[in-house]
Amino acid sequence: MGKTHPGVEGRLREFIESQPLFFTATAPLSGDGTVNLSPKGVTGSLAVLDPKTLAYLDFAGSNAETVAHLRENGRITLMWCAFQGPPNIVRVHGRGEPVFRDDPRFPELLAHFPDFEPGAHGLRAVVLVTAELIRDTCGFAVPYLAYEGDRTLHGQRFEREDDASLSAYFEKKEHIATSIDGLPGLPLPLPPYPGPAPG
Image: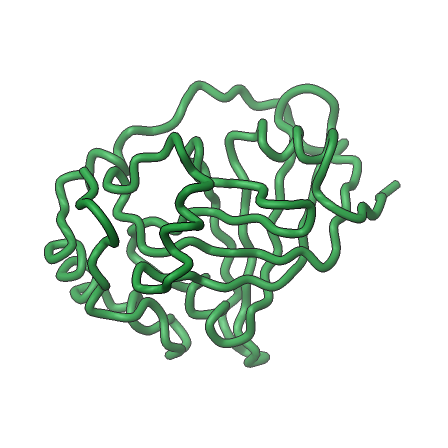
């Protein structure tokens, strides 16, 4: 019932861009390492750059497992599923790279998110994903769920932070600079936000 697609375009792209929620899955190379699965749901934080390239914004949080796994091995899977309308599940398997604030590509990548206010969520990096396998499956068992809107708590929590206080927040967390399995995570101290200060 599944179908392989050559790229994220047409109806597939429309489906991905219309979903309010997607998931990321990563893992370390170690056979007994911790597999990580994360929900991503801030409106405007995902962009399809071309049929084989996607990007999403990586925000402040208590962990940096995805960043650590990508720095070690680059493997990532993104998944969307339809909670309304026709059933569908889309997975993009590929290679990911966290592009940090001090990377020369960072401002150019941010231009793909014109409606997003970077200071609102403690932006740490842009995750760039190159698709290697794109598949959709039926999703017949996924329940109907209603989308009521984005939660405002994350934005309210981090919009009051500046670069220095955000970096201090990360340095206090056990699994930001180092993953649960001891891999290098987010580089600290956090590089300053490039260009005009957000907020």
